[in-house]
Image 1 (tube, rainbow, N blue to C red):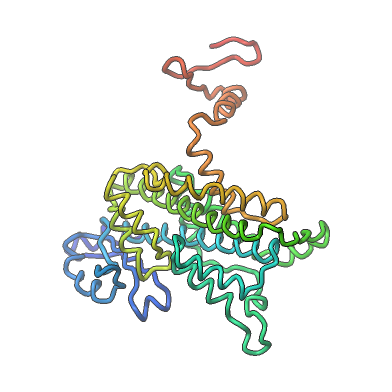
Image 2 (tube, helix red, strand yellow; image 1 turned 90 degrees about the horizontal axis):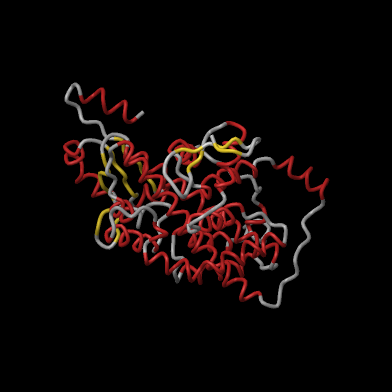
Length: 367
């Protein structure tokens, strides 16, 4: 829509800007992150207004023109896709602590506050601690226990997933976060399924609970890195395909304050793209290679423990699968290509010579 709306007014000399905004109620009152798309001339005429109302990080306003026409709204859409993934992974870790480790909400609040003082420092971790510490003013118990477990959505996560699929860029952690919200809405069906299959057996608190909490911290960090890597990879594909030349370091910088996914990690992301503007994926930058080497084990432990307890971790598990698939030089798609060639003569490429090949599988000879 923004692309179309930019084209028509331009014929009359009118500058149209498509501006993505993030920050929710707090951003509206105290300054949001502002992601603009449109002509440079048009943006320059209102840049001082945007700068004056935007959130500020390290003395810089969190507002920028990111490219022509729809660039700003696209970046905002992918921001929300990453947000969906981040929220889902936090919820999965919460479920492991609550249902597998038997940790009470107030104690979890302290854990999340501790995490927020380290590498996981972010708005979503901060508010999670506040939520888990809040007691119901009427009954006095944890307010979280009185909230129906059906997550709403307004469509932006689905848009992000759809764009990734349309562009052919894998973003499974975003897909799974969207699917998890849809599954949560099937409350009546889930109750019936629990009655049919039986409730998941609660796992007693293990002797190594402290070690598991450390693994969960690492799992969230690794999952967050992967979610950002997927989101920026989708933006890179869109930037190339639509000629936007998105400034990825700038995007990371204007997300450092005001927006929902603001996090300390964005400083490292901005530095990575400043170091290598053509970086194909965050996972191959040395700083994130080091981060994943440190956090990978925790992600594996958390996913395995949740699976053993019968607790779903679709976002964390997909982050692990993406990481393993991305860093594996030779995967299993050779078999898929052989299957496609067998039933549909779709051909395949050989590793020992160039060009398309086809094999007559039923007769055992090449054609």
